[in-house]
Length: 113
Length: 112
Image (cartoon, rainbow over all chains, first blue to last red; front, top):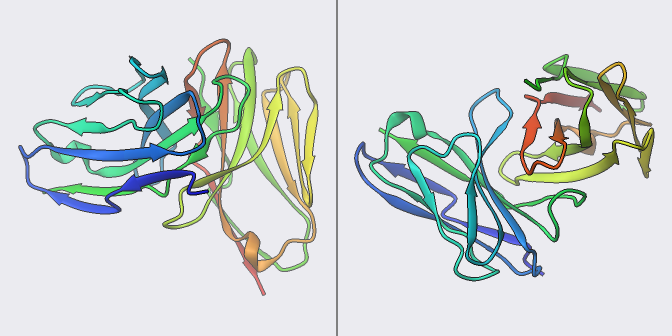
């Protein structure tokens, strides 16, 4: 059972480039989330999804886009990368939303130079 | 606005000691609170989830308590081991809201 899988693990982007962070889960979870973690800070929610075809903004959505075409996959798209998007990105999932433990991927460390 | 604070930011203790990690929150109207462990390069692992109606949860050597009226949660680790070394984060869920509010974490080092 792989759980939540994120790719890539590391990436360096130039300012203005775009990329997609991939996230897949094999636990048949309905809810999926994207967080970013800056050094010495707690996590901040970027986007979340409560099921295929449904997405919603979190606390810091600007500069990002998501889609949820299947239950398993929840990619995060960065358009026109900026240095402020340098961070560690975590994807997480849960079966239901409010009373369930979250399962996290191992993270993607992104640097925008 | 809900704010979550974890003090101290770092803690180093000898192996075998019992220890307490602290988590404070400013708004007592919470839905639940979770404690997570973060290992470098391995993401986060949920340790314990306490519902707002509960006072504590236990898993093995870990015990988490919740006191909503004082805005505090503690994570008690019994008989600490070097393998417990990690960063511990708490996160609070507001009422009927999918957003978790996170503390910055306490980095714990257990010295052999």
